[in-house]
Amino acid sequence: MTTFVMVHGARHGGWCWRKVAQSLNVLGSDLYTPTLTGLGERAHLASPDIDLETHICDVLGLLETEDLKDVVLVGHSYAGIVASGAADRAVGRIARVVYLDAIVPRDGLYDCASAQARDYFEEQARVGVRAGASLPARRPRNSSG
Image (cartoon, rainbow, N blue to C red; front, side, top):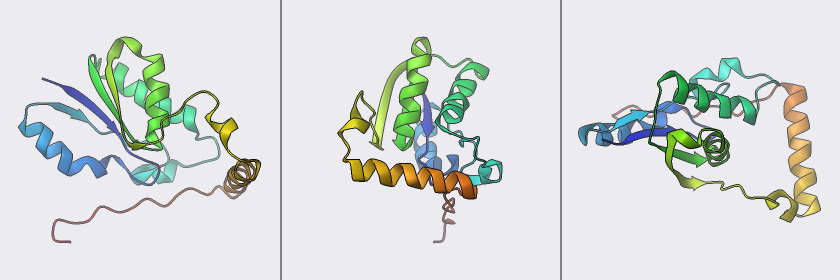
């Protein structure tokens, strides 16, 4: 039996894995789909203090609390960075990391961006923190829609 921890992107919540969960459960796999702090249905927890470190700790907390081992850790979109950070700190618990249409971090990647791109991203981070902004959560579609 395989244990999956599937981590959503920046504009989702754990609910986005609902259909995948049904398929994996039928196959007898265990599936955990946490929602990261400040995102999805936990958007009310958003604050300037929530950052990548918080999200890595969300995943580490799940792995430790549930005493999960031999995990397939799946990161979608932004969560590729989260999964990489968590896997780096929980080597003994992770069997493999899967990047699903995700950001795959590597040393020096930010340095490869143009000065204009870096300035833009840094300004967006400053504006978002000052305004307390967070990305809106996408709502799951109901089964009829």
